[in-house]
Length: 530
Ligand SMILES: Cc1cc2nc3c(=O)[nH]c(=O)nc-3n(C[C@H](O)[C@H](O)[C@H](O)COP(=O)(O)OP(=O)(O)OC[C@H]3O[C@@H](n4cnc5c(N)ncnc54)[C@H](O)[C@@H]3O)c2cc1C
Image (cartoon, rainbow, N blue to C red):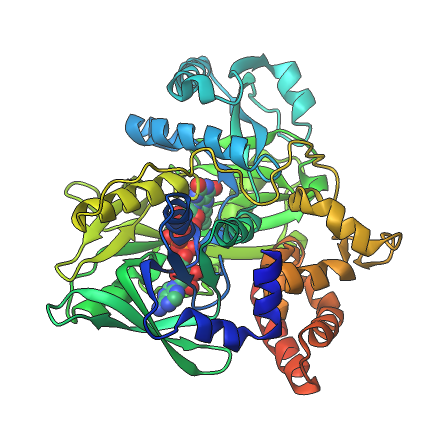
């Protein structure tokens, strides 16, 4: 990564020209730098294929930075009877916990119990959840008494409480994992570039897809990349690429929006997460400790339009505040919300009998178009690696390539470190934390944000080592400032812009434009009080 990122920094254009050299042909070209695309590129390079991944915005700008931050088997899918998905996700949860121990932690969850029936249902259900995971389970589930539940969850309302069922799942930092995956892909011989938008597909004489035309959204320069196979891993935008392949193609996905709010830890001062399996309208609600705050969500609202920056609906915010308020002693108000973020689930279009978006299976699907464009639909962050493996297997089969053994199941992700100290503000850098600290060199108390523990060296690090190109890249995805406290992220944005401009060699006009764009964006994450 070091040499490649230095090249990327000093002459991005030169790097792009090298990637698109005449005569150069990639084995696999992946469109989309979210969980799905990264999983496919990871598997491709682990098998030794040449692979280029292009992302129109920043890596994980789409859904993949807006999840509930769970690496989970999916208790909800068990309730829906989807044992195969739970088994697959539980295995992947275990593998990711092994391969990225600096980012994925064993998180205990408590389901509060209000009746004997609840106790039986959740104890038996969660024991089954443990069994399905087999050796890769993170820890055993147990029933805990009312007294112990109250001790562990002091913020929980106690009226009618009979006890709780404690179980284990994984918790992670989604966009940090995406960045570390980009680094892993590049370190294993692959290439990945952000701010490159695919605008067309290239076809051979016999109508087969053999490359893409793109635009560098930083410079508006066009580029062409030739490839033996092209994969469409664009999440909620898959149908746009399918239209490029065959205008008039039928819709393959439907879009469901999920919203989270972030609150101060004082609303939920526990290290155990809260899981409400059935809210008033039958949804699941989580309160998960994350980076010294608590993330509460999510909703499941069908929406018509796919967007890179979806907006939380008022009714979704009200629902989360009301539902959280009915379980917590200290009811959160709009003015308590530090940040609100929305993400879009790219769900494979419903099958017969499925009506509501919450009922549509979260398992992934692969479509092979007559032009041999490969498209992946649906899935979860948790299963991104398996999705990648399935896609490369499919490509080998369809293209009649000899099968190569998949190698991502035991591949350590960049930053791998087993010494995670979750209370260290730099824990998410894993093995890079020591290098970063060396650059900080004794100035660790000079934070840009004392509250969010963001240091100016992290900004420089993000540009030099993590391909950050904009203020938003640094404040939303290299650090999580925008999601953790949107007002605070807006406060430090001018300093971040100044440091970036210096590091990237940009002028005053760039700085002003960046600030304007970031401030407009941050507005969406800040709730207006009534
Ligand atoms: C609210 C919510 C909560 C969730 N919580 C969890 C959870 O806790 N755990 C879990 O396992 N899963 C969770 N999921 C599911 C998971 O987040 C998604 O399945 C996953 O992030 C989807 O990744 P993706 O790569 O398919 O899509 P995306 O992340 O959206 O990536 C697609 C990318 O393609 C790019 N792209 C689009 N068009 C082009 C183009 N023309 N050229 C180049 N690039 C292009 C986009 O910019 C985008 O970055 C959640 C989903 C939601 C919505």
